[in-house]
Length: 261
Image 1 (cartoon, helix red, strand yellow):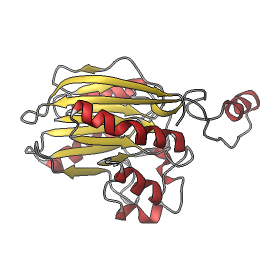
Image 2 (image 1 turned 90 degrees about the horizontal axis):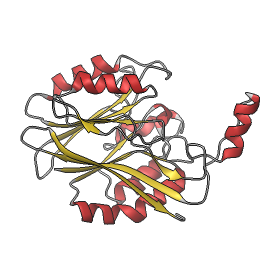
Image 3 (image 1 turned 90 degrees about the vertical axis):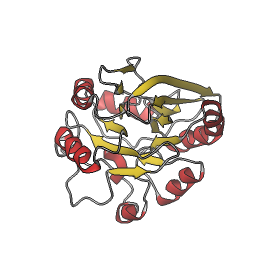
Image 4 (image 1 turned 45 degrees about the vertical axis):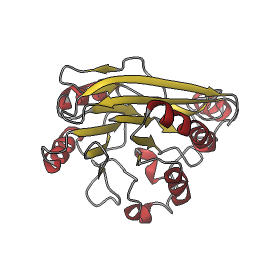
């Protein structure tokens, strides 16, 4: 089973890069399922229903997210309608939307689980206990399980991966937009990377025009951020998972650059 996972898609440049490069990557690597983190897909903050349908039309199977999924207020009341869209499962139960999804594939059932961290992040329920509860509900017949852990602290990300080692196929970090070179397969067969990185403008501060971000750092005054322009980098992780055991057999970081998107 070949699974292709993209880190945070930033604005229209990120979506255009995905549109241009996804067909080639799917064909080259014989990809079975595609997952994309979309919490920054609409102007750098949040998601819209229109973008949901746009990305599904490209062949994206699962759309994960994080703390910015609530930024576009028109989306929130309709989240329950969008079956492929996930928000972190460890938000309180009254929050709209769903935090996990179970898909059928030619290789068997595959579950995707979205979690948010608590260190340096908005307050949410415990991701460790939430993960345990979700895995118990899935049952032993679901062996291929991919976790998007949207978190800030590297220690928290690694701790969750160790906690779930041998019980899920992968724990993939998102949120910081900066790719890490620590991809590995843990002793129990769980793939881990602290952060997959972003798909968005290179000449930026984590996808945004530098001027606003610099002004905020220099003055402490909140600024309106805008998605940057220019060359775009696409960052993803390719997983090869054994359907029988759910263990990851191989993983590969993918990074591509487009001069314009």
